[in-house]
Length: 296
Image (spheres, rainbow, N blue to C red):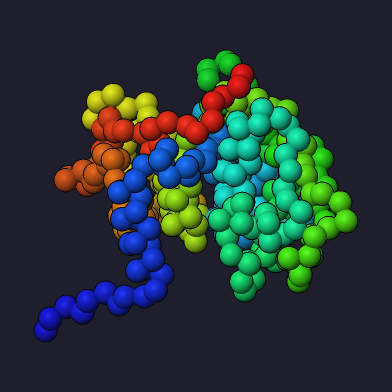
């Protein structure tokens, strides 16, 4: 019996079309450059809703700790898109005062999101979760200990109605970015292609793999093998550390890589033939140049 061909969908067709445009024109020419704080790629926010008021994620010597506000822990793709946009605005303006937009619709456009369906409501909820959370990153190296308070905002003013996203507020919506987050964005942001973020925006796993690849391949100078154990620590939230859990994680990561490589065609990433992990080799950056300079 002949194998069944994968079903084509409008979403799949659009993704492939977006990938073709990304491969045909670099981000510098297209004027589509975002960026993200490197530390937040090393230990990421949860992919799905988590209970409780504290979330921790460990990656080697680094620990991400999130203390929720009354709204809960931020999760999923929307907080990632907000973080990428916010990092870009910080680098572009060199300011802790960031304007969000006169309406929720305007903010959604800045994030590359449509206002249809529940998108406006979800973005408003996740924005409150993200800006209201206390975010801490710790690094332990032998007897050395470092701690960063990476709060996205020390103040937030926004006047949005998710039921009427086009309605402008009486006052402008803005935030004041946390000082450590601001400094770290200026010091170590990774340039990303906004078109790739838009193509991958439906999956937090896709966004994490793309951001990680953009940051990691920037530093690779020779073929380097990353074990499945290391990769599962990096990405595998929710997968048990069992044989079956590892196999499920490998299968899903393989699926995510196919999508990421379509929107980052210069990335040199491939599975080890003996199943030991993932090979990385020196690659061109996801974005060759920035459309704005870092005004440090």
